[in-house]
Image (cartoon, rainbow, N blue to C red; front, side, top):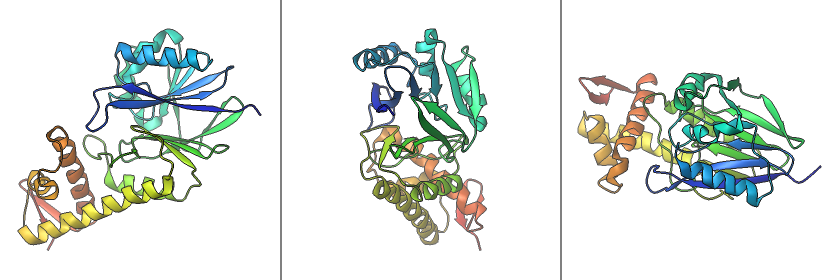
Length: 274
């Protein structure tokens, strides 16, 4: 079996601080290739991808997998539409993907456990919701590589929240990844993660820590808004540009705690359920 190339292609994007690029991944050999994610819809996407294909002697991908529909991952499809690729996404993400890459419309859906062959290597699609409802990960068993989209970053943690993030789903997805045999993680942003289980555990423990921290603050202050909670949690230690997504993550924790019967809300104020 010919050696499979799995290449991380960082494309400069105006994504969330502290990251300055979105990772796309080329999988294949000099006969065929698959692209995972495409960054923003700007000319830099096309230039970087074309240069990477040329440098690595790989053909234009006829198949592109989008992990999710966010603007730093999906709309770059429009920059490579002349390749006439088929776009793959999870069934739950299709509507958002179609909107993100319109007017390009060659979209097919996959579900958890579906497989795809690239250069005689099996690629397994994993439905890993939480960051979005239809978030996809890709697992390459022969290499024990996980391409994690925005589930795992090389630095810090991803945000979970509106419009379709779900903290309960995200925790379940992280626990699923914990149970897998993974040698390396290709994150949505940042360098390769060479200590995958340590990083997954870090993210899971951070989310559980935040949940307990929110409960503790609500016990102490009796009632707080999501903005007030976020300010207490971070105490001006985060970049102002990410405060809104930090607040959304706080809200996602609160939604989970409401579903769990631990917290209630009234007039935008959250409190421990009596």
